[in-house]
Image: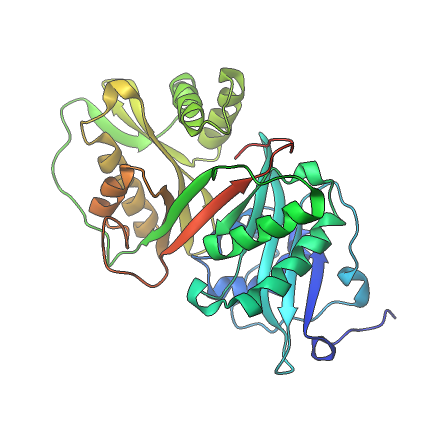
Length: 352
């Protein structure tokens, strides 16, 4: 029988999980209690397990793993690192790092903590992020980490540590600086104005693939850092349509706006792509479609819909009018956090 290491014997412990089921078995209860804020790490794990045999339980107590899972090891596939502390004798999840990929390539490194930014002192945070970075350095080649994304309070110090470890400089400008926001049934602002004749808000179908692919390509091209060829955009469009995770604004057969939601868990969905082609802008199409999709998700059983929106993105006004909290000068709202993506010079760019 392998030796057991009890968390109370050390201040912090990093655990490596090579499967989503192992990760969720240990971290799932904490993630479930913070299902909205943890969406960036939780949803990618949930879609890798069989829902018929696995269910998250917020009340479960984690069974701490044996010593072997605490040793860094190289891996080719997706994996997760969790950092635990046990100052009071009971293991508490402090940080999660996710190293995962998608159909079109590898994703950034995602960081998450159940602690709000104002609860993370430098003295608490610095050694924990250093431990995660040190463990990650032993797991993957440095070029794999092309960027890191998460709460700003986590990303900036982690990126500095990673740069020190690898010699890969942090890109001079952030890839993305955004607000994390949410909408619930209580905050949603429903509208009853009829659409113009011949206009529809509807799920995309296979016959929309070419138009959806073109808008996916335009969306990616706008991001600068993660462009897509039309061929790869067709792959993305096919997947989104097949999984029923994208809606369109259809104006007499012309698709001018898309809205996708690709990170879904039991109670939360994340809107991950909203784009209107230039010819269809300034007509309110995005607001109508986002409101319809958000209503569809909330009426279908989700408790919260979340999204990220850039600090300088005029779409903040759209999301604010729909009912997403903490945007456009609203007072500070609990659960709305600043997020950041920082890239690394010399790394191998993935896609998300």
